Length: 604
Image (cartoon, rainbow, N blue to C red; front, side, top):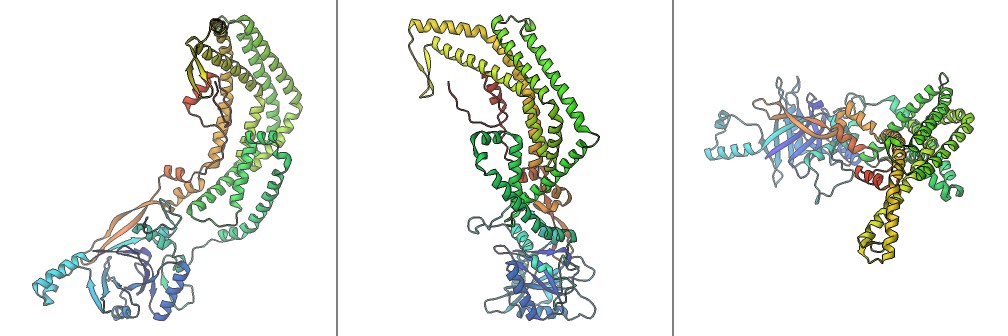
């Protein structure tokens, strides 16, 4: 049998005293948390352990004694051994460190059924000492077998890192020991993490007990952190009050009407505003985080929000410096005129013989003039709005104070508004092309004696008379010869539409990246990798003759990809996430490609 003792590195050179810790249930191992120094009164030690057990909820106890010989303390080891009768335990660990050696020796004192103490030395004795005992040969063999079975391994760990780290996979709740018993390593991490009240006592306390642990030189604290904690309470109350007013405004009946509700669900600015409102509710909540997952989510949201606002303020400083807004306004109208001119030339080219193709002259002229009329209307609208463009940009730039993501969402909506004529051209061409595609597919089934059953959503056999077949042949011929002209217009305006959608997609991906990227978790992984532990590794620290085996436990941090995947903040994106195959199918049959999610019902 192997007895594992998790020993903190900060206690390697502690003064002689008592070991306070916990026996891990279900495993033959113990976790040492602190060393209470001599001199002490046993009654005060018992009372202190009970108080710490009530505060932390951990089954703390006195595990044994720790002896480090010094001048004037020759009888300290025997005195500490006699304390096993005052602190009745099933096992009493008596750890001793000799001068000039790195390793420890450990003696385990067990109590039998009658309460008598039985001593078992876990270090191996030499044959010379065994011969001096005067025992029989058979008894020697049994003692050697018992000594070989009862071994002690010291696992040294850094107490501060283990207390602050979170072992993954995360367990926020308390697992059922019958169905999901926690591992030995996880219980050890939980024991150290939940024993924080034990570490509040340092050498500057005036209490009767002195102890050694990771904070025994003084408590770790920060004045800035404490001031932020004090200022967070009124700030959260103020944010909650502002959010309540904003919620009351949004719940006004006029904003619940269908046109406004539908428009707000399609505008990127409104979606981003609702997203930020939900995040501010999460941050201003008075309830503390229930577990590690919720704490990391709140921290990631807070850091992302601060970085977003900082980037927005940088954008504002650039926009309102050196009169950049006026420069953008003066560039916007000529750019719109240039785009309209290029579209006019493109339509003139399509109304001729594009690439040497012979188009249907009548349909070509009708479609070309129809689109040219829309371009002239759009140019008139742009020139009508040109005096107000600088004011719109000036006030729209102030929205960056809410964050760079809000400014990017507003830019996406402005792009959608400025390219509305391209969207109209695309819708006209797609609807006309889709009508002909579905008409040709229906007439093709007519030639094969088939028809589409709308009720059962399948193709059934059907018998047609001569008149129906004749009319179907005429319609099929007309649609087939008009298809190239319609397909060419549809192809050109679909390519223009895809350029606009691609630009908006880049903006949406940038917004989602800023909102969902776990900056706090990645920062922890870079600067304090032990906080996010994937596992542990061991290496031999000391293996001296006459001492137990000493291992050093080191924390393996999570991989960066795992950190991003696990702590990525979910976004409330309303943008479509179609596969490439679905996108190609929509383009081929002429279905509309919207920059938002929508319900589609297949009809034929």
